[in-house]
Length: 76
Image (cartoon, rainbow, N blue to C red; front, side):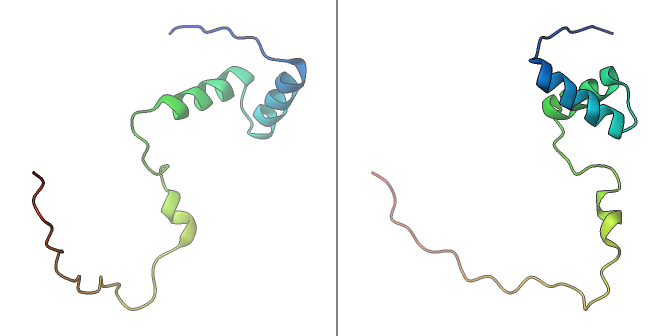
């Protein structure tokens, strides 16, 4: 695994260390997760994201009928 090194101002470093601690992660793991999330080609919803909202209990959702597409003149 590759190691990366970077320099940040002291106040930023303190904030990052605090957030890593709040997340229960080492600083290295916290930064690795941020980088992975930022460069991930898969910008999908986080795992179990929709579990936070429960199941839909209303009537089934239906998309209303769509109007016909408009006719456009051809480009010359």
